[in-house]
Length: 388
Image (cartoon, rainbow, N blue to C red; front, side):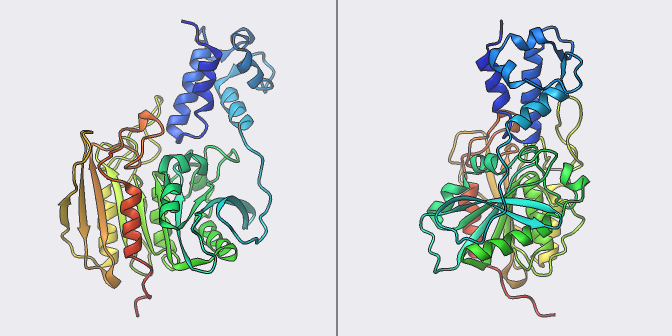
């Protein structure tokens, strides 16, 4: 059956804001469907079957050999979807709504997106939740995936979505979380320094409660949450990563940092027990992930929590084949604790929200990650530094 131009473009253009593995899969699917003779190249006749695709691929044949390879196809479509760059941001006080700010970090211009809730009162110190996107994503995809703006509006905190870095300005972005991932790690991008600079900049334009700055994120974003808790414990009060383990041998936090970690036992991309997991059709996953056990026990030791957890089965509200268990290691220094929300059969997804793409697995509706982590954050403002 001949593929319509509208169907093909839907496959391609919805790929740009997906996580990196899903994005690559979608673009590969679109290319293969257009490549009617299966030779791995798009001829002029194959491209001309689709008037809209013909327009989109003008100039894609970079080497002028008369055909378009997959690399040319992918790079051209992604570059063409890139929005304009944001100029450096003046220190103008924030008001309710959306804004993207640009700051200098070393030789790089870095950006972050801010959502300020309607109930924001500039006269009152306001909590901040930093939400790091996954590998290959961007803030726009994370807004949709997490649903955190709605929680921000309900609870009254400011939510911040940092941009990672990559070969493209706005797509296929990653963070350097100490042991993962991609472009950011390979190029030794200082994402800890970026986070510190981001918080400095935000404090110039908003009334930030510096004792209530929290971090979360999915996958590479979860890894980055663990990393900033380790390296910026003077700024980060508590964290709640989702589907992204601690990718260090042990955290370096100078003060105990409360941790709530969400992870599905059916996560095929960042496996619960660690390892490479599922990758694209051409090979294994992006890295050798550390396990959830390593992640939890590292923080239990660092925070001085009790060695045995309290285990509570959470209500099984949805008929979705998943059950959630809360394991709490309490009694840590300065009232800290480590909590694991274990989702039986859960995928590489955000609990409580529909996955942005089916290949990432299932998301439970028994719990809301946003509700649970906000309750946790409210319980754990930054405590005074432990005396030496």
